[in-house]
Length: 400
Ligand SMILES: Cc1ncc(COP(=O)(O)O)c(C=O)c1O
Image (cartoon, rainbow, N blue to C red; front, top):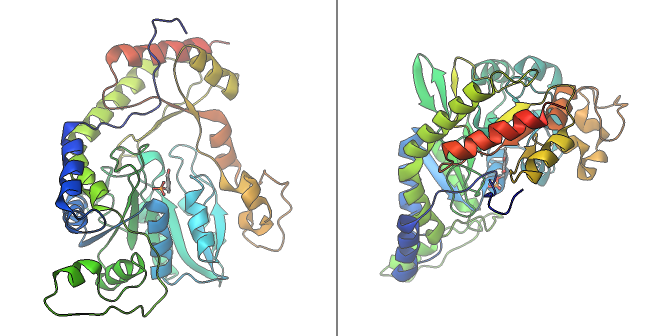
């Protein structure tokens, strides 16, 4: 990379004065942890996605943990999910003492293949945890058909999917409405809006929403906000085991500003993704992402599959040498040391998994996606010049 050339990062949050002012407002208010800003953020978030309830928590991993607990996942249960996701998806299942049973993905969308779900269901299956990977909605209609026929709840890992939409009974609806039972979002800085760290659970079930609010604050029967405003002495009690999964008011104040920017962010990302589609259409063997007719991605990430002749690491290194950050395809949890003790996790029959550690004969599409795809830079203020540089360097790197 020449001295003058600007480095192009993989992602960059769009934040500025309004977020700084909002954080200041929370700090100066004297109430900095979960309080009125969190309540307002929850209401605005629920209105945006179209859910009855939204409950803010510390991050999406804790949201997933609470969602699984709410639908009754217990030690020894099985939860059907994908290995091809950030490790938090599978980890949240293990936090419940349950076993993730991995199902392979569809190569075009990088999302769970609904056809394979029925075969993975056993008498220990307690829930299905699907992911809208990198913002692309998964095939919820087909997934819910299988889930309903087995009476199983569906949790949506929507960590990456704020602003994504799905065609539902002829209308475009936001991911998070929710279409399954509970949806979980992340506000980590790699997501399209951020609160530094943060998460949100959406549901239409008032009992679950009540439960989330207790669990996120140690199971405390009377929240501190209520005690603070009370005219009489009240003592709280702790009728259940809870957690400290709170979001702070500083984060929520920032989140409210980010939410205002969201429509513009999604529009811009759709434009940039379309530009990539057009500019990369003529690269021989390069497979571009496809949006099913019933899905509109927020393009949290733009992921391409490399031509067969190209080596993933070499392409990424050529790009890096030219000052352009890329990332490999999404990881596979079953290949990580933390999961290799669990040979059953990739097997549908549990008893007869003969896979080599780190490679599973049932998860070949997941492994291929990790090994053959790369994620290109995409961020709100990406200029045409920057995008052209990414395209040119990728074309050069693919010409080996
Ligand atoms: C699909 C998916 N699920 C869960 C998470 C965890 O989110 P958080 O970092 O907010 O806990 C992530 C974060 O990258 C993710 O991509």
